[in-house]
Figure 1 (cartoon, rainbow, N blue to C red):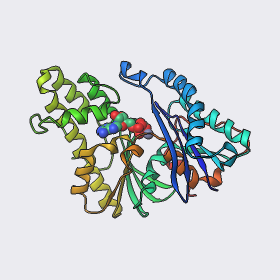
Figure 2 (figure 1 turned 180 degrees about the vertical axis):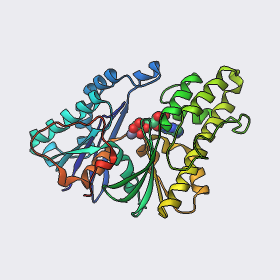
Figure 3 (figure 1 turned 120 degrees about the vertical axis):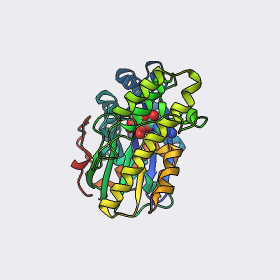
Figure 4 (figure 1 turned 90 degrees about the vertical axis):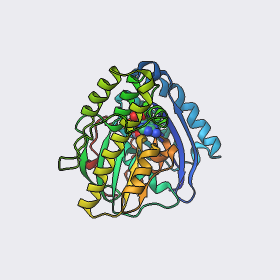
Length: 331
Ligand code: KG4
Ligand code: ZN
């Protein structure tokens, strides 16, 4: 199997890419929907409509960039879950439709496996086993990764995801959406030590996370502050999240005795998190390049290649808005 097209529509990014095992990412396009900024969060119905509007032209364009026709593809991989049901259905319907029309297998990919395996697309990929920290807008989890498809959940958030905490803090600070990059930018000018922030759950045993207490603390602080304090609040908030993630990663490495950590998902683009993990952890830390941290089609095409044996030619359109990562099986 050579050329795999990957289609990502689980949330508010429309991503399409062609991956080829001998060449890596051959062509890729990501369109980030802007309409959601006014609402401070993703509006599912708007997201679905935007995917419908963008996807067909993006598929044509990515094939042009890859200098391929649809007949020269070998498989279509699409995100089948987890994610917004309507948004997933758009990618699934288009992906399965394309596969069926061209007589190709369609591969249903788990979005978080796409993130988890994305560091394998880099020049120096991690070797199995490793611990993966997956931090996105919808998920925060630590996973013991024995091999592709052999995942054991070590811990996850009991309430908000790390990215969601960034997004909510951004909204309280009057910043744009998605909030992570905006909070990080404002934090650069701030003093992280000026205000005290809780480090949630770090004194409790285990590897679960909770960000709702930090969110409440941050909200109260912002309500009693002046705009001139906002950079210091952003910096203190960011440092509290980063410290919490670092402590749990160190604990996960200690418990599993693995030497490497992989970090992926939108929040893994955060520069302070990367610096902190690099300097605090004993072993090697592996990240995807920033453009592969946030949602994209390349990680779906790549994960699809590893799951190529699961391709279906029956034209069945299957999505799973809720899909536990641990249900995946070894390839
Ligand atoms: O993986 P992703 O693109 O979509 C989901 O699957 O959710 O992650 C998006 C999340 C958003 O919450 C966004 O605010 C956060 O990743 N994010 C960041 C940064 N870049 C994106 N958070 C902190 N710092 C960043 N630089
Ligand atoms: Zn994602």
